[in-house]
Image (tube, rainbow, N blue to C red; front, side, top):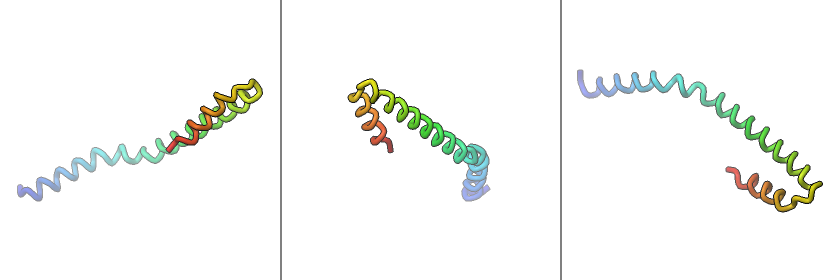
Length: 70
């Protein structure tokens, strides 16, 4: 077998191993995005409740943390 044929064979095996994992990536990303959204909504609700209790320092920490996300 020539070096080129060996490289092609290796590529085929590598692609066969990684293809299955890549197909789940978009689903996993959507699930994580939905979870982040739920957590942010819960944090916003807690922040609103904290305003009634006078926890202004904690509210400011939440706002900074939420703004700092990528």
